[in-house]
Amino acid sequence: MRGCLRLRGAPHELEKRRFSYSERYAIWKCNGGRCWRCTEPLRLHETTVDHVLPEWLLYDHEERMHVISEYGLNQDFDISSHENWLPCHDRCNRKKGNVVPTFIPAHRATLENLIEQVPQTEKVAAALRSNSAKDRVFAGYLLTRGAALTLIA
Ligand SMILES: [Zn+2]
Image (cartoon, rainbow, N blue to C red; front, side, top):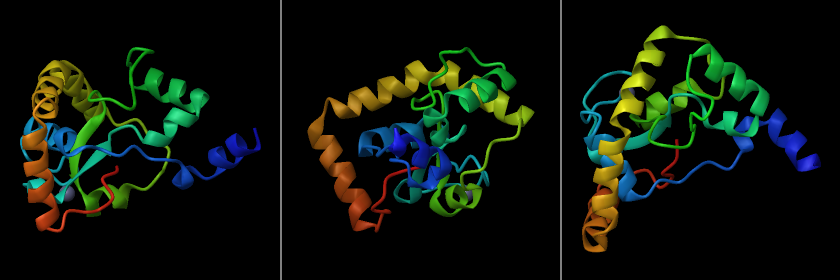
């Protein structure tokens, strides 16, 4: 219980999701190879995965329900899924920090597009996952180009 209280007060200390190379590739590929925050082209090895609605909402039920209702999303909207993941530069990802998201209508449209495209993104990720040789190729490609070691959003 004490742990929970500490986590609520310090969202930056929360455990963040790690993304596989296949997931990163699928998110990059299915979203036009651009950073969704600055809209500039993003090379695969620069890609980090950003949560449109911040990941720490997973640990704050009340705030999550508030934000989900503000955005007009279904109650079962999954913060930790392709419904909420977009490719992003590491630097653009870091700029955002852990602030409580204010309602931004454009982000609602972004989320609606993402939700629509989930089957396609999952298909691409699954196809890569099922081919472990390909996954190793991507891992090698990313690592030789100095991809960030922290594959987190
Ligand atoms: Zn960017």
